[in-house]
Length: 243
Image (tube, rainbow, N blue to C red; front, side, top):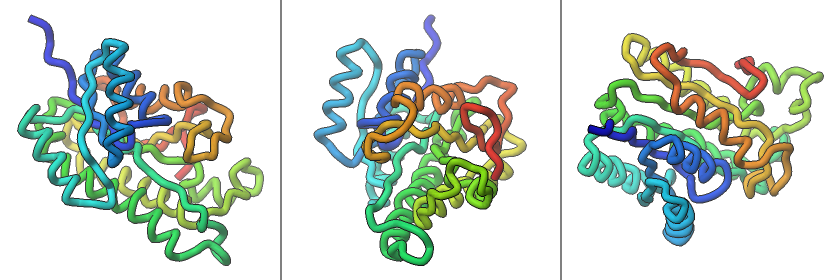
């Protein structure tokens, strides 16, 4: 009898890095649920991946609408009884974000509500299902911009990227990784922050050094960590990222 495939939820997976993470997980035999707030893009993503023979489906999920998060958890629980992999990929930038002296506080609030509070809400809603997994894997899509050490290092290539809302949201996301890793310390469940790198996506205005396929490789790897997995790390392609 064939083994039951692992179940993964990838938020914001209708395009960009999220879509490529979903593709790579499905290619590895994982049954992937694409969480997205845009029904049209969800249908297009599912059609694209299904046409390639991959096992994917979509679910309505808006990080700013906690009712959709609760409903998604209920649906996944009813259909699968568990969740093995959660990739917290969904996130936003805001044109009104900027340095601390000029970035819009309202923009910072919008970014924080999505990138941190929304991700926290998804993680909490899915936690009962993740605990039903033999060894759940949670991947938070972070950024080197969320590193306090990097932000304070004049030698860093990211030093001048002063986006108070976005950078703070990723630092907060890293705090979720650290604290949840400690909560899960005596369990087989693992959570890590993964920085995919500077990837050409809509979020970066199609700027960057990497393709979405390349950017998806490290999150994909951490979603499938084995039994010897280390939890509570902050990593990028070149190795550990300082907090």
